[in-house]
Image 1: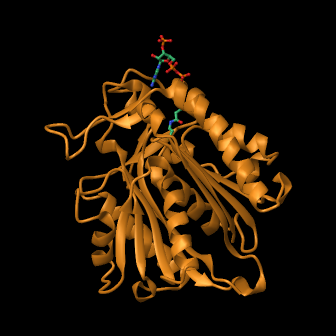
Image 2 (image 1 turned 180 degrees about the vertical axis):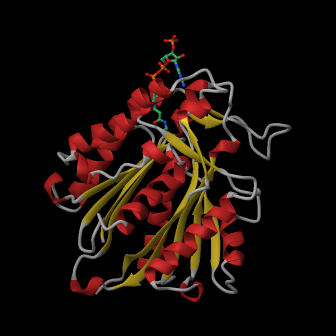
Length: 322
Ligand code: COA
């Protein structure tokens, strides 16, 4: 039987500091009512200075390994999806490797904005199926609070900080179709200017702030994600009725609800964290997955569809039998 990537553990980390919409409204010209009505967001977590992508990623990784009953010795590779690394290099992944006390294996960062975790799952799955590695940590870790433009109320109220991780192990799926069934990745670079950061360490005196044309992103999100969902189901000869859980990227409650409706899934089959976490970019899908696995909603054997869309434009899906 061919090798498959089994999701053997999930974990998350959220900064201690919670910032409500009302607290934001003290310094930003906004209101709890506006934010909740347009996005479903009630609060977000903001990182303290020591809570970097590296620190939070390592914490989420430890939680995922513990959940899997594994240790750092079982890890061959670490992939960190982040747009907010501590440093240009070394990569966040090798810093996490050091924090986990690992003395072997390899790691690298991957940049695909909010789709980063789904991209990371796809790369890890390919490496596992090729027999290159047998234990991979895929982490999404972001501190968007450091790249927000506090003068732009159209974006600064939408994001939060956090990290999520999964530990993938090579396996045979116990004679079932357990594991990652498929991943589908997309990008359209010509849409790069509807959601971007206007700087980087390679730019003179421009660390960069997030810029977004919200309406354009919203329009693309609904159509592209619907396409990604249909593509994943068709590739596996499945229908909407086969899906047990949708774990979508957590950007906006209205986009999430639209996707759930298209799949014909009852609201209680769609994992939602955007109300409490806001948009944590590459961390949002693994954080939501970790929450729903650890509170017992998502169970072994169930079919879970992950999807995300973000700057690039990038988007994609992963279909997983837990
Ligand atoms: N508080 C109060 N008012 C705000 C506001 C805020 N935080 N942000 C914008 N407004 C105002 C605008 O100034 C505008 O006022 P005007 O009509 O007087 O000019 C009004 O609200 C409408 O703004 P608009 O930008 O058209 O709102 P919208 O209905 O498009 O909602 C988003 C804005 C960002 C919530 C919505 O476009 C969205 O969710 N987009 C997708 C975001 C997304 O998914 N991004 C992540 C992808 S990874």
